[in-house]
Image 1 (cartoon, helix red, strand yellow):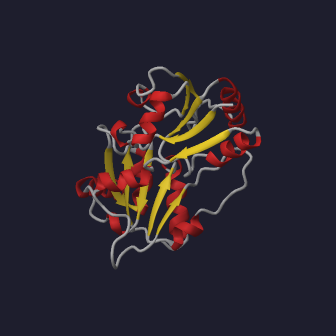
Image 2 (image 1 turned 45 degrees about the vertical axis):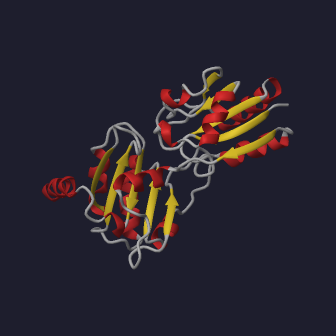
Length: 250
């Protein structure tokens, strides 16, 4: 049996991959990659067969059970199998399901960390997610629920943290805004949306929790990370003022 590496591709910029990730891509026989992995990153695996197994909301996607089987089958044929995941494999990447399936089949697995979207967004904003006297806790949450999964009350963690990084939440912005306000977050709480974090085409908009639905509606089609909390107060002020005006006029 070969070995499977669960590799974090980071937030998008190719030069944010770790040295180990780049080396393994160069050695890979086959790379199973997420939908959001760019061609520049995949070009680091010139000798590998590339297999797209990504999942995107609202689009046809590969089932997790089938991905698990493909990884096990590939390990029986190849020495170096890379499962390339956006961000960090161990955060909202369903890595544990793949690890469990591979270990149950007797396949050796190694995890290679990557930079997660929240940290890339923080860098783009030049705003720390923690700040002395303002924010001493951070919650990474997602409102996204997979088919057949039990509903998880992500709001409990979000309500308890000073800063909240919301993954895969832009499509449910109205529900997210309403849920957080209902849990006690002030409608005036600052928010920032970072689309395509770390990439040259990234965009940043900001406003308040009350205007989050309008902010989300103005985004493009890239992955969006939402940051909620005082640490993002004052980010992209002009965009925030314009969206506040639009919201007030509704």
